[in-house]
Each structure stands twice: as C-alpha cells, then as structure tokens.
Image (cartoon, rainbow, N blue to C red; front, side):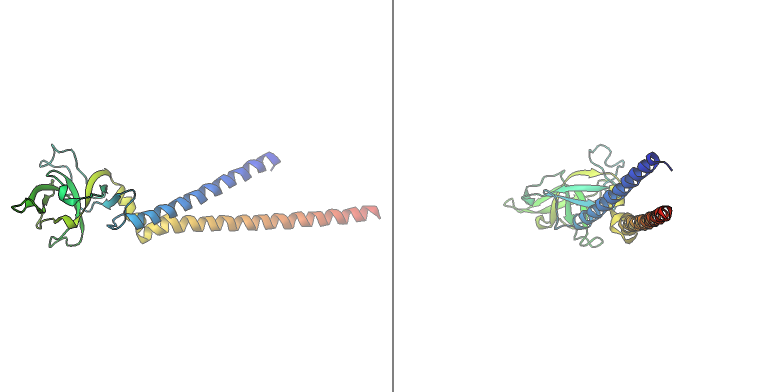
Length: 215
C-alpha cells in the first residue's frame, strides 16, 4: 500500500468516525428533547407543545372533507399556548385534558362545536367533537382543561417519535451507534499500538544491523 492510498484511507476513516460521532450526539440530543417535550403538558418550546395523535377521530372522511384541517393517528400536532381559554371560538381546534369516561386524563385534540355560557355571558365550557365521525365528546371541556389551540402538524412523524421514546428505539438510535463508536475507536487504538510496536521493532533491527555493519 503506497503513501497516497494510506493517506486517503486515513482521511476516509476519520470522516466515518466524525460522522458516527455527529450522528450519535444528534440522536442523544434528539431523544432527550423528545422525551422531555413531546406529550408533556407542562413543557413547551417557544410557547408550542407537541402531541402524538393517538386516534383517527380527526382524519379525513365524508363528514369533514370540506374542512381545511385533518390529521391521523401517528401525526404530530403543534399546539400553541392560549392566554385566555375563555376567548376561543366555535370552529377552533383545541387540545385538552379529557374528562370523558373512556379517555379520562388523556390529551385529546378536537374541534369546538358550541360554547356553553351562563346567562351573564360567562364561558362554562366547550362542546367538542371529532370531525371524522361528527359525534360530540361526552364531557364539556371547561377552560381550565384547555392546553392550547392547534397550529399545525407533521404527518406520520409521531410514529418515529414514539419509537425513539421506546426501549427498542433507545437501543437502535443511541446504544448501538454509541457501542459502534466505542468498538471502532478500540480497534483503532489496537491498530495504532501494533503499528507502534512494529515500528519500534524495525528501529531496533535497523540499529542492530547498523552496529553489525560497523564491526
């Protein structure tokens, strides 16, 4: 192997190493951000929360084909904070803590169909529904249970986020690249050590040959 080939090989190995390092660091940061923000009611980034859609209650159907907003199970929805949850309007899509018997405590993102008020105009809560079926939710959504208003989505990305947050996702996206990085550097250290020992032996042999030649 000539010097040019060795130089190219060394450069290639360094590039691969740095790419692996960059990927591992990125996935670690990505996983930390995902675990600490996605599906967390108490966390937001610049006033926006992120939720993984769990059902198809807002997916496209004959009931909502004329509406502008649809999302499916596995999508990520962006939900912006609302300063005053009593200012929402009919037709707004909101995320809220459900008090329905079948989904109690879960985060649901549905559309407001009707606003319930007292005789003096105070907002009691919102009648919400999934536009796919058009069926109203069981419980009235009181303002204190509103988490925010829908502002956008990332189709299908929620499936990947859910995978990253799982044990297999951690193994595939973080542990395996990290172990590969350690293995690669271990092999590289052994290679360099052997090269050092070989060069040392060659120097000793050259010195020995020199001494014999001088006799």
